[in-house]
Length: 594
Image (tube, rainbow, N blue to C red; front, side, top):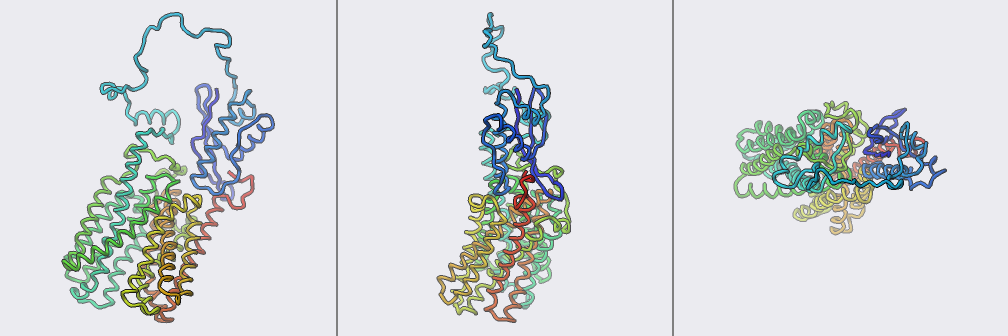
């Protein structure tokens, strides 16, 4: 009897740089297993040949709406089911045997009962077992002595089948995996969100710092640069260090170092020492986002990745608001020095939790179903320079999109109250209240964008980002053109702009960057470069807005935001076209469909 399975697929490079997918076939016959790799076109040719002579089962469609892991897995399962149906055809078609490379095939012998042979023995059994001797017992005595460790079982199966063999996931293992997924999500969500507890006190205590350290307004501006410039520089230049150290050490160690540096600010008596400690804190936090994304991606299936990253991105807004509230409370009741201490302690504790528990599923003997296998030759993380990362497909476009999106986001967060005050004649209190509409929209957009991508956009994160950034530009344009309509419409358009701006921020710097990086074994380096370009936008937005306001007036600020958003949408649409062409599902001839 012939048995055939399609356990997985992989992407390979073809001629002229075009890639396609091949499916691994495992064919079992007369106790032996041999492996083949076939393209979809080979299966389709076999199907056309068999249907001339046999009634065949339904064949998976040729065209794919996209090439996400969920769609490719559905095609793999469909091909495997069709192959199983083809193997039931009698007599076995020669074309099928040739396709499976089965030689010297012998049809199965008729059943013994057909010839009248009685299969029951004429004597009593010599030995009678009260239970199956080859299955582990359930008693306390036998369960520990007869059950092989899972590592031994997995090793034997790996030796017999393949190095990428995956053991079936039992109900107990699935429940254990779900528990650990929840634990890891909470730890990572809290760990990265806690970095905002370290950043927010600086904005709250600037007036106190100016008096205590006797610095001018320019010196206060340099405090922001001391924190943000090292953050952007390390993200851009040293992302490969995170791949070398691993995400657990990178995230946990970065949090601990940043917490120590931030706590030390409370003991500073000189302005230069504060600058140095802020630079150390910013540099230590630089790779925390890439490390968090890398670790999070390893714990969840490819099909759920966008949803998970969308919910994960809410930590930025939740901890941002919590950090501001905590800093205001501590500064008002205990003074500016105390405002740095409790947040630093919280971050240090979370860093230690990451160092202790932030491990890959395999280290906890867990398997995550639905995780695509790594490409051949990228079994381990590699060190990539910034130039190597920049040459990767999609990285320049996604990085520029992140620059535009984050420039708009931070410009509106920092300058919107002043714009409402000077350009639209709001009161100071009303301007501060209305400006929070953008952050409220950002929280909603971050939480919902992943669900939208996975449920309604077929996993097309780049296309969704392009459409969302376009909608953000249109919302800001409507805000400018309909400004005379009053505060209610201002709030509506700001909520929409925040939702459509912050949602793509999470996708591009999260799941999209992780997808690109995992293809080359440098997830932290790629995510670091993309996130670093976004951080560079947060550094440059201040001088850019100041220059435009000084030259053209405050009314020119919002048109500038529209232009930046439109540029971000344009490069994201370009990235989507490049992505589709590289996967071969835009205007691909039928002979090239894999």
